[in-house]
Image (cartoon, rainbow, N blue to C red; front, side, top):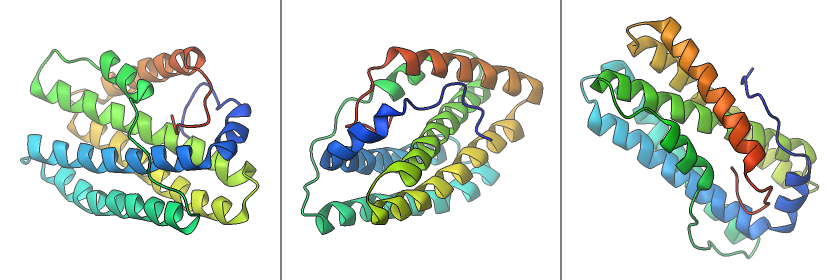
Length: 194
């Protein structure tokens, strides 16, 4: 469904389980950054009415997710740590084409968002199936479902605004290839969602 070319290393869930405060902290900041990214798109492209209508409720949802993760930390007596540099997202941003028209930059931004949501969905699925804590299984299943919907929305928006939908499909495949290579290069760590 997601098209990702490299599944999460099976060791990741075990490492995440051992670093629960760290993975929940990173998850919280991922939700905060997703909120900010949607707001940025709305501010940069207010004339894209379909996109604004699609993203406005996602802003609320992502901020609600941030609050849910904060609540999970609190429930477990854990603290929100400091935000870390997100190597995964930073590498995707470097791969994103910054030249071309304003419309080309919009498509690039939407595709990066789709890929981040796809990997988040895949990671939350891994957690929902494999983490030992039953409450966290349910917690992450709900996030998996939400991320899947966001992934699809971003891809659909990219196709909607593309002058050539075939070009979007081609570029999406390039992103998937790049992301698989990136996942192989990044260290497997349990303190980060990506």
